[in-house]
Length: 120
Image 1 (tube, rainbow, N blue to C red):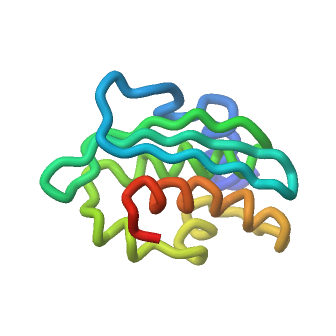
Image 2 (image 1 turned 30 degrees about the vertical axis):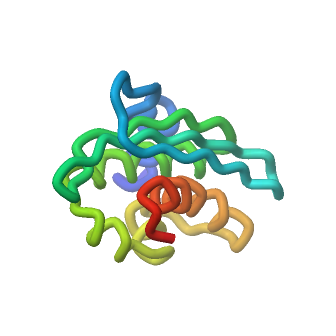
């Protein structure tokens, strides 16, 4: 097993930043109608920076790992930096090959985060 697979599985088994924030400024929920995966994200944003992020993701391993990895990567980023993220960036962060149907699972957390920040 390569490092990326181990990292991916670790995020699935123990998702980072899973739960709720006591105080947040932005939030959004998304459902992948194709497979039923769902996510709710909460962000604390101040001075145009993401200070904290929490998510509750229910669904497949790809959705859970994507939310976990993105939540780690986005803390400390500016809203502009988050806006610039795209499908290629998410797939690269996951470090695994995805079928076309799984790309939607991987992108659901980023869509929710961008919706929460009103930058879709």
